[in-house]
Amino acid sequence: MEAWKASKPFVTGSLSGCMATCCIQPIDMVKVRIQLGAAEGGSTSPVEVTKKLLREDGITGMYKGLSAGLTRQVFYTGARLGLYDIFTDAAKVPGEKMPFWKTTVCALSAGGIAAVVGNPADLSLIRMQADTMLPEAERRNYRGVMHAFSSIVRDEGVGGLFKGAVPTATRAMALNFGMLGFNTMAKDALADMGLQKGGAAQVFGASAIAGFFASFFSLPFDYVKTQVQKMKPDPVT
Image 1 (cartoon, rainbow, N blue to C red):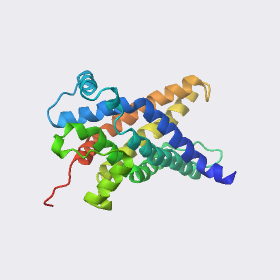
Image 2 (image 1 turned 135 degrees about the vertical axis):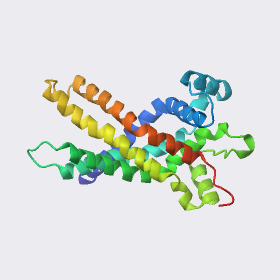
Image 3 (image 1 turned 90 degrees about the vertical axis):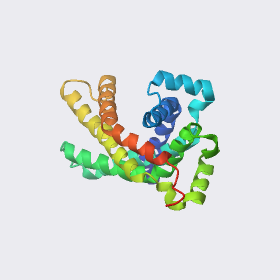
Image 4 (image 1 turned 180 degrees about the horizontal axis):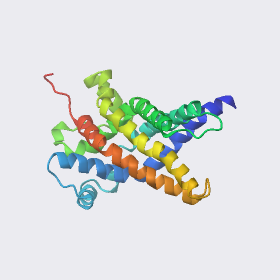
């Protein structure tokens, strides 16, 4: 039971992340294509990008990189949510409401550490999603996440798995700050306004507020991360 208690936040975080990925993978695919297209002067319209994806790759093209996305969630989301629970439990003082600065420190720490752990899968995901945008001769043609890992190590060394780790960690810290920090704060604020603790209105209201702030704080870093991870290594340097 002690082992399950210790691992539960990581397991439930991983499972929830995998379920979420299966639902939002097409949206994430469109987002990455918009970010890359914007850097190259292409269309930034979600409708146009989606129509082009469906026309060129079919419905399965919307799920390109799914294996990498699921692997990323196992490591990144599992660690992010699991570490956040551990950090907040350690920071709590019995009988006192935890101050926002403590929540912020816990969220930033959990997000940064988890992002480094999940960076190899995140890197593979971006490259698999962006591959068909490259000229045919320059495509990496990863067959799955394990093939991506082995190809990156072979071509770029073990350090290549952590390309873009700094913007990835910064993005994750900003995301966690917005999502977990503001979720906790919003729940407390909504409860103080009279909404039932644990009720649907409080849970969904806090989630909506947290989702907005998570996107607001993390999007600039997400854009930089996508550009860095998509790049091919310079054969000269």
